[in-house]
Image (cartoon, rainbow, N blue to C red; front, side, top):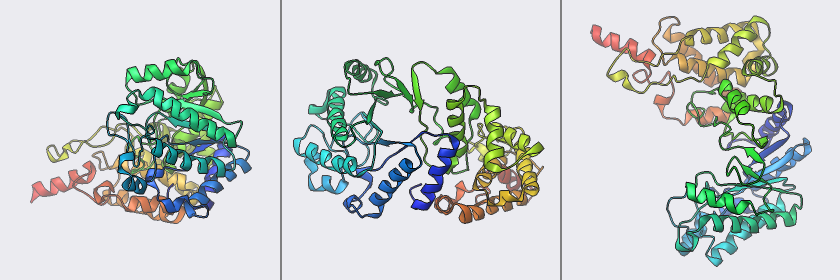
Length: 425
């Protein structure tokens, strides 16, 4: 997504609206990952963030932002090394400044004032205690208190520009005793409206986010296409219902599209199941009907299992992770493309096929010729280049052994063939 232009963002936001989202959250500024030039009003980065926000509003959805607690530009810390947050047990990202240092705190607020004042609207503000925040210096030793005191000031600053903003707190990644202290303080903190998953028991409605369950980093982080986990999503959403006020899925790329759709559908329709959502996705977003719809829906439900080799193939040429039906899923996707030519121009199809092909490369089989699998993998990447250039570019930057048709001695299917040839020599 970092490579997208605004036109691509518009399409994505429109699709989210069609899928049923009523709020879109985004991260407008991670200061430690940006340069001071990005902070200028007319910079490409800041212009894009404001445009994304306005587009969400224009589509009739609410705007939520994930705002960092205490990061600043790294160049600022180079100029003021005494401002730097101390490394320690908390999760620190780039450019964290100590909020207990008066000069650093003034800079922290200065940066956030611009974000809050120049975004056209903010309906929800989320800032966690960690993950782009944290410090372990002596002044910040009581981090739960420092976090909430700092966040309260930032929330009040945000409310000065957006009076109706709802505030979301979160203590994920803190130690248990610190987590419990955040929970205790929040019980008497009327300025906080929600908690993001935890701390549960703080007397606030819960917006499920941190453990929704995890989707975006699962199954290769998009390196091998999507990792659908619809049955797990169904189980998570149907089991965990206590005090739930809403659901947010964290997404880092288009490989999460099918999981995002599943969470939106199951969160808004208590009768929706993994099966019904898979079939709806195939029909609405792939345009496939009839018998092929059932087969591709079944394939989505079966994709994403534990199918990645643990590199033991060098010891045992027969080793692979069992994955029944892997080749058949590939064949079902290929048959569907012959029946529905419009799939040629559907990036969601190529993503799912890419996953199916990668899983097929992780088994030992002669059902589909290796050359055919390699040709289809190359065709997928070719079509990503046409339909989703940012994703194609990202794949092109991966190490060659992460591309299934580029490293025959790594992937079980091609390794097995290469090993047999080696033995026969």
